[in-house]
Amino acid sequence: MHKTKILWHIVRYSDMKEPEKILVFNRLQDQHVYLNLPLDKIDLNSDFTINNLRDIHYEYPYQSPVFRTNFFSFVFVKDAHGKYTTDDLIFTTEPGTIYFTNPGHFKSFNWHSVNEVCLITLSESFLKENVHADIFEEFPFLLAETVSPRVLSPAHFAEFELLYQQIEKEYFADSPYKNRMIGNLFVVLLLKIKEYFWEDYNPIYEGNRSSQIVKHFKRMLEQHYRDINKGTVSKVFRVQDYADSQNLHPNYLTNVITSKTGKSISTWIAEKTIAEAKALLQNSAISIKEIAFRLGFAESTHFSNYFKKHTNLSPVLFRKQQENPTS
Image (cartoon, rainbow, N blue to C red; front, side):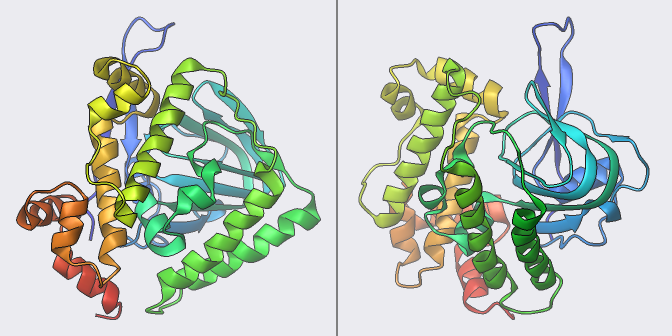
């Protein structure tokens, strides 16, 4: 079981005289613990959750604090009213609204009333392990900056409702193939989002220089680790390499990435390394020694220690669990 871990970041807005502490949550359960919200419908051993917000918030209006998350959130509003903020933008939520947020942004939400709202959260590791190995190549909008929500007609919203209800059914079932079934259903959900939302994708922050730097960094990071997965590169990029690609000083790039996403470049690289390691470990044809080499470790023991530090499992045990899900 994962331990609850709540982080704090200090941020300064231009109109503030004193720094303000911003909460950072790595998992939805961490957020619930801090906000004193129920945990009974959350699988504490999974990086995937699905909940109806009517079962979580009991008093309205409800105003959350400002926070950052290190997971993806997908929100399907069938019958509720409120608003949410992403960085310095405010959006209205009403019946038929669908939106998603990715890791790193400042967020808060306010609910005036909730009758039915489905919230799905999941990590990058879950996406890569159970949804699609090349998830960001197939669905590049997941790396986008802030994008406006969409309000669908009841008929179109019903298509998404059928999907998230089926996902919810599998989530609460006791099947050894639960994650695989959820992953396959989530692919359909993402394809529906791609069909309805993102063919005419136009991110709000497209012209912002800092956001362009972040976007370029995320895409380069993703492409680089995709090449590592395929075994087509012989060197793991460091901060200097990402800075050189944009003709920036490493310190400047580090400051931009940290201030915009709440995570340092080294943290992004570490999380991506673990995500790719998990994906590679599912392929039993690739030895752990080869995986260590691909990910830039001189010795497989160094890789094993690094993997265990971040996951509390050795690569051998993680692979065994993937091969025998019932054990």
